[in-house]
Image (cartoon, rainbow over all chains, first blue to last red; front, side, top):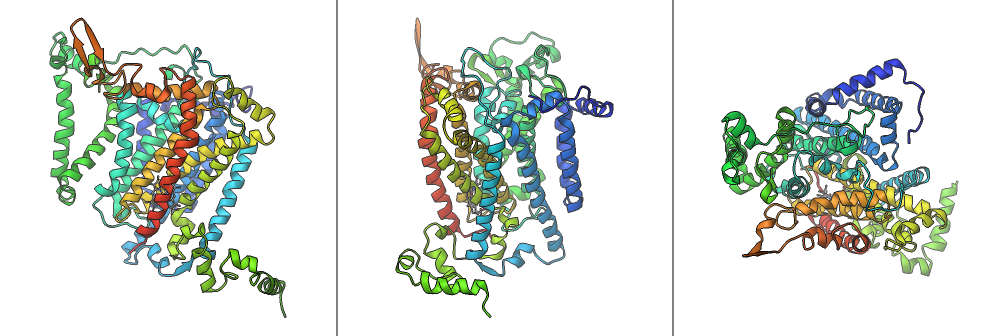
Length: 370
Length: 270
Ligand code: HEM
């Protein structure tokens, strides 16, 4: 339900909505997110300044308030189960700022030869009672109060009784799984729902064993751990948070993509003219009919995958020999394997957007599509 | 000149700290001496999760963001509000939805408890996630804490599963369709789901017929749901997982997690 609606949205604001809608092509939106991400890392020294960060915060609050003038946005954002998305945005944003603000300060100190601030503070030892227990108690009281206020002011949703015969459109997973649901657009369920989630878990677990850098324990830093922090934040912010945002606000009926301020149209038809790599290869490139038996048809796709998982790691060894020397063969393979799998998601997304590529390898006989 | 505080203190010293009952429960006096401050922590099983003293940086909120402690706090709140909800909820399709309605309409504080439980669950997902972010950003996963990071990853997974299994219990449209979307993916598990790659290869050809080992009534999704759709057995299964199995496993792993934080030592700059 829209929180409130105006008879007409003021013209300049409508103009702004239309402009943002123009940017909401899947490829453009994703690319802009990445530009913003890498840009923010590059310009971190400016962005973490409290005044600048506060400016961004205020701007984003204004932006969201203005967005509520749009009925479609208001109806999605007004769903009680979507309230955590805003907490996600703001609290995650705040935490990222807090981490990077301290990291930048520490990096400057380290550059001056002073060592991180934490090292200085760590020289004094404090009694847990009262110094920590009091903090814990006060924080717990605040969080409990906040939760109670939240529970008093926003009612947990309860829709119609379950009806297996009537599926809602779109049927959405809970918000924290929307990243996975979004991956289903680009990969078959066995990859998007099983392999990639498994890889996220195993990838997280192996991080400590595949990070050979002894520096950066016990203090916030960026310069001492550039590669590790960049990779982790990329996965955390771009492949998780951005996909959740897209899944919540830009996926409408039939899981079609809609611009942020576009009215969801249940009859929107998108021509699905996605093409398999094998068809590209046999028909467009060689001008022949696509062979029927799968092993004849699909060898170009298998070759691509082999090249990706075998040659690229070799190339990276050539480019960064130190990484390989530090890790050794097994740990290097585990690291690069996970890294390439993670990167395969944006790669597949761009291939879809640029060439309508459906599957790199497609063996429907065995439900084996990549 | 004695202030009010001094006088309160005097009364406490004379009448409370020397009292037999107090002394039988707490083994220390007012915690304003080093000795008593240490004893507060060491002689209390709950506070003893902490060491008696910590390096300065570990106490500051800007370092830990309190997120680990809050993860645990959320778990406790969810346990308490969850037990309350269990008094009024029966996990069968005849009752489940109506029980939620009567929780809202008839039970004193019922709606409030349900709201606390639901929003607390959302908050816990977020908090655990941010705890992981802070552990990463301070490099705290590096040796000797590699294993505890792994324990944490499993805890994150359990938190998500707890939230996911709970999502089904209200048995409304939102619930069954979110779970249907979620569990449909299990169909595609390689070798274990009936629409997964390689699965169709597992079987025996008997000339005129074919014996298929994994089919829609024997695959992993069937195991999870106790049927081929999200129906009554799925509700019971998710209820048991949500209220008994997953919290037990999570509680057990939290014990391991806390123990290891103490044994591995809290992360600190050199
Ligand atoms: C239910 C989930 C969890 C609970 C209740 C929990 C609880 C805690 C607590 C209370 C601490 C003490 C320091 C602090 O507050 O930061 C801590 C530290 C730690 N946690 Fe967790 N945690 C959970 C999940 C995780 C996850 C998801 C990870 C990582 C993937 C993780 C990895 C660690 C590590 C490595 C430490 C040691 C940090 C250090 O020495 O600086 N934990 N945890």
